Image (cartoon, rainbow, N blue to C red):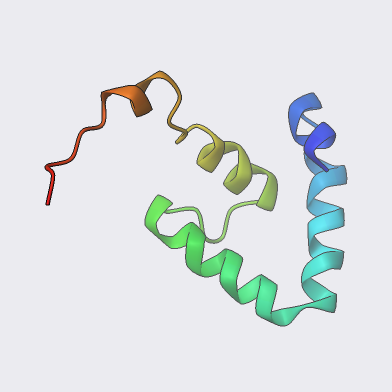
Length: 69
């Protein structure tokens, strides 16, 4: 399914996700819940994953600092 995301295969990805959610209603509920902060509920599963994938720390992680306790 990661390959489907990278290649932009929306219909195939959505079909596979629908099947997975049918077998696991708990997973479906979790994915809906996690999509809420991004305003993605009601959109395709493909859109949800592609949008969330944009929120990744890469070079920024080295800039994170915390105060010593």
